[in-house]
Image (cartoon, rainbow, N blue to C red; front, side, top):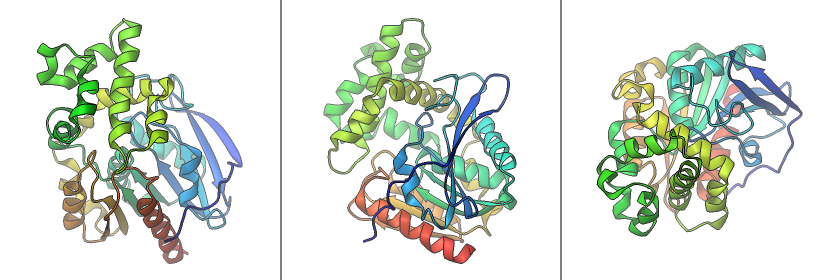
Length: 316
């Protein structure tokens, strides 16, 4: 089983102004003359980490990573204004044009898979291939599974901590209750809710408990953007039409894609990856039998590296 590529540093960092409000942190790694690939992080509300550079052969790929609106080192932090799926798709296009890239591979996991699919369906002529992990189609049933009824039956102990910031009488509509707290003026309640929201995700992301993952999600800077932006998107159905991605699958019929999915992914259950693969003739589905949701899990990481290696050979 192949591991991740060695740690590398970025060779260039940029602060790109998207509009009068939002500035995005963007970095370039690997080979400046290599095959272009853009990495789309999860959340929405997460951010890029050094780990994310390691899914690609640095001698072969020109790796472009960026923190989406309100995330990581982009500013303003945790901001919800002009922050929709459509804005993010246009941001990706602005980045592509800024670097004078004609076509590139798109790599995304979890929410990053959602954004990658919507971007590819919007701009198919600019995409050479897709590598996707932990498929999230942003349908009501998937959002409800994790934030209302479903995953709570498997993690009742973690769920108890997740619902704690919400009054008992309001727990039948948790997204709306959380949204009120996370956009409210009480800073202490807002931060407590953000940490509860983000830690719920960190605790459930891996098949086996992983202290490092939970600590990462508990970081106040990460927790605030994850909670506020995720809740903002999910209360608005990710600004997508019902079942939009599967309905528009014909737009990417000719784009090759690799789907990597943990069998025991309880954040984004396997059903969505299966339905995507069945609808998309150009895709391969690799089910990792001993993994959950996180890209850092050994089997998932190995399958992602194998996918980028294989696609690089075909693209070359």
